[in-house]
Image (cartoon, rainbow, N blue to C red; front, top):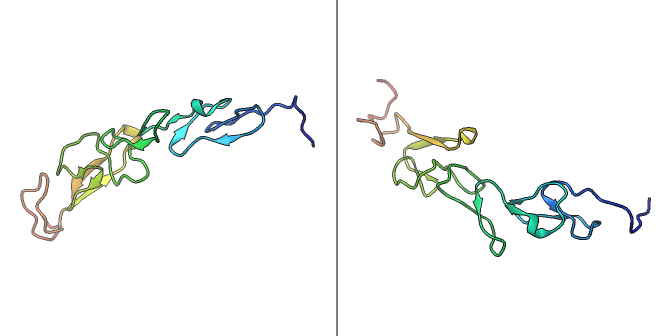
Length: 126
């Protein structure tokens, strides 16, 4: 088939159809409901912040790990395992986005005394 001016296009989620025919993707880090008709219907995805006039950027400290964040523990405290959305030396962080944040804990046996460790002698034997 050919199309005519009366053919309709159902616009899928994350796209917009500004003239009812042309399907365009929402910009990076944005989303839209199905049936969107304009670029203005695209809003920042979960874990991102921005406005119509600026790009959507990752929101460090919101508890939602996105693209370039190594971790996001839902706070802005330093040296708690996740600082500025980067994993602190001697810690491991676990992505628990279904629960709203990452959980970070020290790595026992790495010879670094961090977090709640009283000591770390370089082995994992208590």
